[in-house]
Image (tube, rainbow, N blue to C red; front, side, top):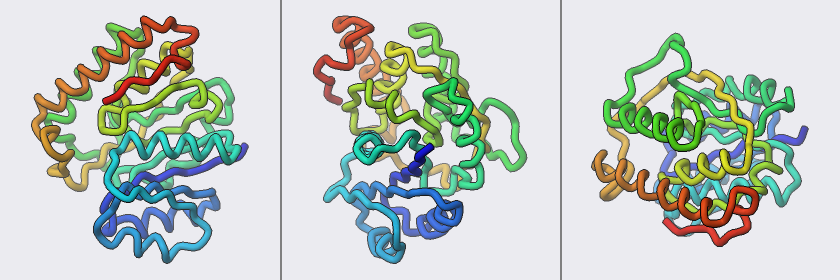
Amino acid sequence: MRLLVAIPVFNEQRYVADVLGKIIEQGHDVLVIDDGSTDGTPDILRQFDGISVIRHPENRGYGQSMIDAFDYASREGYDWIITIDCDEQHEPELIPEFIERAMTDDVDVVSGSRYLMAMPGNTPAPGDRRHINMYVNELLKERLGLELTDSFCGFKAYRVTAMDRLCLSIPGYAFPMQFWVQAVRSGLRVVELPVPLIYNDPNRHFGGILDDPQARLQHYREVFESEMERTESCGDERFATCPCGEE
C-alpha cells in the first residue's frame, strides 16, 4: 500500500517542525500544503529534506488545501492518503492505527472522532464548536442517513481512488459539508476511529465573519443545502461529473 501523509498548514511556525519530525521518523512520504503562510513556516519547511511542498501564494482556505492534497495523491499514484493537522491537536503517533484500519480493505474513509469515546488527556471543546459539530452530526443523520460523532475532525485516512470519484470545490472551512454529501451519495464506506480531544488554543480564529458562530453555522447550512440540491439534480450515480458548485 502506497501511503501519503498530507499536512495542511497556515502560520504554524510554533508546531510544524515537531509535527513533521514525528511523521518523518515513521518513514512515510509527506506532503505539506502551505496555505500562504506569512510567518516563519516556509523557512522551517525548507529545512526538511525529502518532503514535498505545495505553496499557495495567498491564503486559499482549508478546503483548497485538501483538494490539492487529493489531486497530488492521485497524480502520484498513492493508494491512501492520511491528513493530519499541524497544530498538535492530532497525534502523529496514532497514524499506524489509521493505517491498520485502512488495510482491512473494507472501508473508503477512516474518520477520526474526538467524541466517539473518552480518552486520557481529553480537553473540553469550545462550546460553540461542540454545538456546531453536534448540529451537523444530526443534520447528516437526518438528511443522509450518515451516523457520525464528529463531522469536522481533520485526522482521516482516505482511499485515493474513492476521492477520484468526487467533485470537490469548496475552498474554505465548509469543505466537510460538501465532502460528506458526496461521500454518501457516491456510496463511500465510512468508519470512525477514536482520537483524543485536544484544544491547545481554544481561541483560534476562523477569520472574518466565520468567527461569529451563528454566521459560521449559517454558512455551513447554505453549503450543505446547495450541495444537496446540486447532487439531487444530477442524480446519485453521475453527480460527480456535474459542474462543481462554488462556495
